[in-house]
Length: 379
Figure 1 (tube, rainbow, N blue to C red):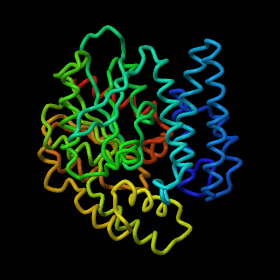
Figure 2: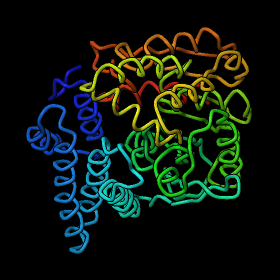
Figure 3: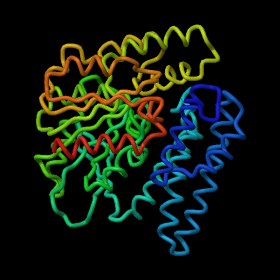
Figure 4: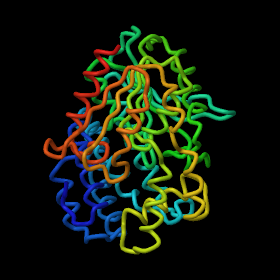
């Protein structure tokens, strides 16, 4: 689904940024005027133009807040956070040594934190105990009654951030009366940048401490706890649910069977196509988030990321989502679904309805409608 660019990666990331407009994460005009100044495949221009837009919108938010206009401030700061994330997206050659990447990531976190304090009720920043350290999270509450409600534990994937989790799922959940506990696991967001924690295939070692933490919260209904994982999180959540049986439901957004298959294919593209923006980014981001030194090591590390021989251990009802034009995991959701032995459902999002892209970017309302209608029924 081409959007503003011929470059497939630029098109997808622009659509991703614009799609969050439904939850105050973007404004279409701002996306259009930003993208028209970016030449095809020019990653430096991408970063510079999105950063400039983010800074301009942040100033609007800061001025509105100083003048006491809380709603205007919240909306502008939410957009700025998403734009800062987008500006940082391709800066993956050496993030640890890239001062601008660090600045953009920090600005995305700070603008979101300031907006989160203006939500009604305000989001609660939390630190979740994990193997001698903590993982950053937000508890988003549907109301301030303190009454236990069905709660979604949510994490992203290969390149998600905690702040993006609000637009990707939490905002839609809150409208429907769900609490959401979102977090960055190893390899994601600030955990890799500030703590040096990298992805691990045994994701149950991550989710089980999060479930432990969730069950200490009086707002959480312990009998109605669901896990949702996005993108690579479709593998991570499936792996966790195979071993963590206190979950009442699981959503794989989308289903991922074997990450190695994708990495091996990307390796071939990266080796032979210097102009392949997507493959180049996938390798650079993987080196950083997996903590490996090169392409061969990344491909080797990805071998452990498969649900083969594991997915049939999931016992809770599971929803597997699929995207007709998924550029990363085509065909894999069906393989996951076929090997599930628990109560299950497969939902395919079609190109003709606007939801055919990876993780249904650009179709947030349709994605949330189908996901939460299923959760309403199951829970």
